[in-house]
Image (cartoon, rainbow, N blue to C red; front, side):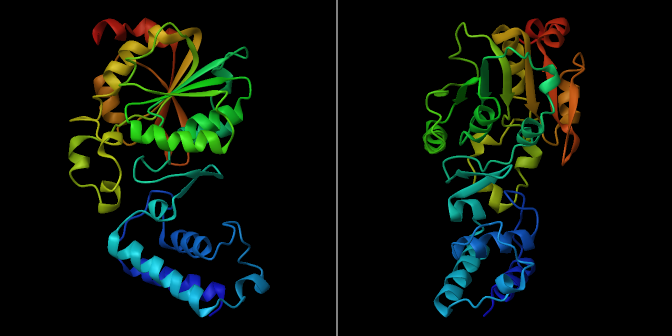
Length: 299
């Protein structure tokens, strides 16, 4: 069988199944390409438009291996990233397994596009990645801003073990410090110029209807309570005490903007553009937080 035919066959099987996407890919074709190329040990940027590439013959044993992987994806409903132990964020590869949520933060888009550079102090030296998960945002931050040191925190020691693999992979242990913390609990006197936070924000009603693929991820990294704001309330109440005078917070709230605005009507954040729209990621300055009085209202 030829490579492109094998991908088409895999696509047909995935497309007819009831599997869900959204954890690295958004559709059956992209997932088929990913899984087939991964199983065949081919680069994910393989040029399938080149006839010599698309028409290359695939050995029967390799076809069988692809068939088995596609069958496993369909029958187990395990996300592709967990099956391959690899996830991609903004073109950068990261190790992932079931101990951590699959990285897909829209903050990464803003980070790589420089969407908040205009608010970032040019003399910035310290960043915080709260709810770091597998460490992908911390790594991207360190790669994007070579002068920043990054503290990466998570409540889950399992997730931090995965993050440690990725920090070591990119040889960033001298600039990224990984620590276990329940929110801001372990932070001391350090003031941060940049705080990134992709917290658990899925509201209870949405958690109750999550597809099976998403239930494979740690619930601790997803569930945000009744309105999705259980983590965000104490975070915003406390973070101003850990911000430099020109410090900024970049916060992801996903589909919960309405709940966010109901919970914090006194805030007027700057909403950043992402591929999912202009209402998923917001930016808050220390001045905004201080003037809102939020630290007093949510002690």
